[in-house]
Image (tube, rainbow, N blue to C red):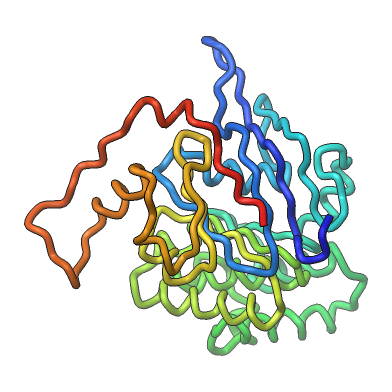
Length: 287
């Protein structure tokens, strides 16, 4: 694997057996991730979240993964044991789930959960773990981190819960952060604050970020490169700053269905889907 590539995925499929046959949630996609911010956008059901979960082998049975290659940190993910995957998860790659506050354990304090995430990967004393957890809470812009350390999840706001989850995912020092719509449940002002925190941490640490979202405008401003997914396949790849120059009719349709305050229109367009798009081969997003 090239040194600049933190992750390489070649011909990835995610499949689920059903009564009527095999359902392909992700269909033969290929992409790589460097030390960059890679956005994955598309409608609900396009395969965005499944892609993020598949990379970390978090697809629940009876679902299963097939691929020619999934390589992370020089490790063959497809053939790695569950013990090896647990070492990779957190230490090399972390995933912030959608609406992460509900991923926090309600019967453990914030501090217990963050220090547990650290001590699962590093042999450090309780004192050291507490100090690093408090420092990480401070790094994600939480006021009075010492006090928040001892709170339970139900005692914090939604925005603070998001930041706590980000702190928990970042404290083991991963090289890859997969963020699955981490700001979708937040109001606009808190969204921007959380994005600024993630942007600073990713830049300071030289991490690779996979940012999964359905918000085209948000991704175009926040990411470096964008993959547009439709029906489990990548239909277009473009630089974030050139998103409005996209040529695939699906991407154009998504853009035209989003309100634009600077160029108001009397009526938003309805997204027209062509059945032929489902059968088009997936576009490669390899660097």
